[in-house]
Length: 272
Image (cartoon, rainbow, N blue to C red):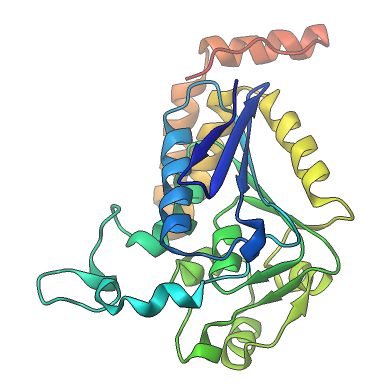
């Protein structure tokens, strides 16, 4: 399938059920301006309706994953301030999120797993975009920071929702209050990343291909449970597991997974 370009900022290629989403503003270290926000969201929404995509890899072109907010984009204050009619940051323009939050949340909302490959600089909003992924491979010498307090702001691109359960509370507080940089190795220790990797993109693609070889309905069901259950009671979790299993049991893909496993061959699955 030919590459797709969104707002001259994000390029998407799809091959063998794996979509590669490339933040493609290398000359600005993939910093987040208006066009980049729109492109990230548009690419995510497109993949949400692209049949046959079973896993997504998210990476950055050039020297870095994403340097965070392009400060020049803050010049137009009208988009940030409440206009008294439900506009500004408090407007829920994308379901439960505003536009900036959706640039991170769109990856968590996708039905298929998303794997981020992080290298170079990953600051502020860039860290929050990467945090929207299910899994993150990170270069050991990557430079990360919860940067917002440096500019007199707080993290507000869904970071607090996405870091919850991964990053220890007191560590997050320290890093937020001080906006100090930390390395890729520290990011794994702190819970911002999953694996240290000398080649994050190669490892992310390898894992994506592994995931893409599994039953897509089972993987999607597992992601939905992973997204929903942290806010549920124990009783609700138990019921959610049962409902999800009931929907999968004896389905075409579930029976094919059993046959393929017993016959020691690759499964031939139907995409939802």
